[in-house]
Image (cartoon, rainbow, N blue to C red; front, side, top):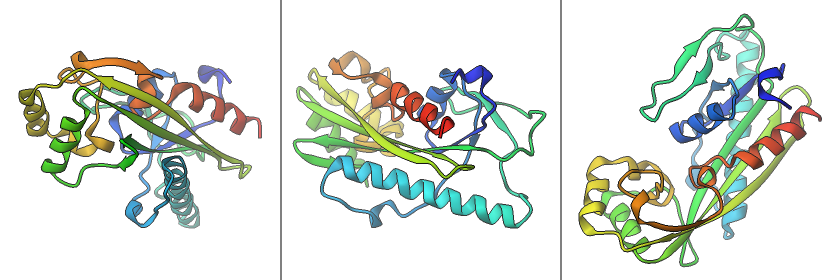
Length: 231
């Protein structure tokens, strides 16, 4: 499926600026919806199972919202397409000719960081974020990113996850404090943002892809979208 030629519309079920940016870079236009689920209510021991279960739960929540919207004559179905995105989170918008068309493909995602065998989600406090980042200094961590794609017309759905490993140089304390003060690390899994200008110089080696670490592995997403379109 070539993005520019696809007749299918896409919903990205995520509030992540990084995921929006990656999907726009892939050439897709998409609407945005949020799942608003209680992620802490879903627990599994294995990180791979956790991220896939959370992505599915997000999809289920959005499908339920869309069904409710349909019952209300589509009053709240997204009609704006996101054409591109910026790091500042100010997307460029346009309304298409088919603004009332029902979206067809839904993408939901989740991510955790695994450090020393322990699952890390978004830090609950500045202190926890600070400890997370200090732990990575001179060591390594892994990200597990899930992608769940649903064809809303056929009911087809499939989920998979991608792993990346990040090795770090020593991260100075003043860099850690600047990251905490800025606050972005408080809103991402494991307080880990390797693309951040303050962090990038201290990434020693990356096994995997940066888009996977950012939360939306391009190759996996493309593969699942193709399967969903052909379902």
